[in-house]
Image (cartoon, rainbow, N blue to C red; front, side, top):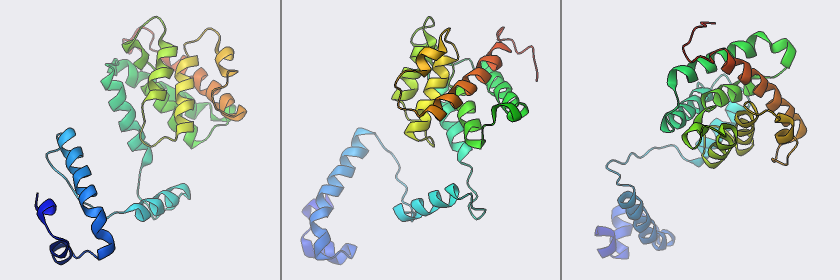
Length: 217
């Protein structure tokens, strides 16, 4: 209200704006007001971090810089867990499968030859492997892929999300080769990696087929 009623000179004096910024004030404030109202926001925090800081941090992470103490895998895991809980996945079974999948990945590394990022994708796929049951328990793989591709998993690129979606689809399929050969926007090497991850996920899921956690490791 104060911005709508304020004169240009008052905005300049009160907020330290220059004349070139005045035209942006009202549209920006109205947009933020609509967001706050629509999303029923009660609290707003402001930060000194801007886009350039974010790009610098991201570049440092990509370069594996020791100066950055940021665990991106924790962000991805939390996002996947939230999505899994949203679709009412059996938590005990999910956690067991994720644990078995990572154990298999680590112990069979000399065979599959995959790296750290693929390990993250496998864990994410294991967490989300049953979200499709929310729609229909008869066609879990197709529903898995649909839900995962339609929802953002924070920390994954669009390409990586497609891989996770494909892994959660083909690990339940009787004809995984059919879906691997389809045009899913992935390169051949990525489809091969997805097939390997799906194989590990299928074994991990079988180790808790009873859903009673009879196996500890």
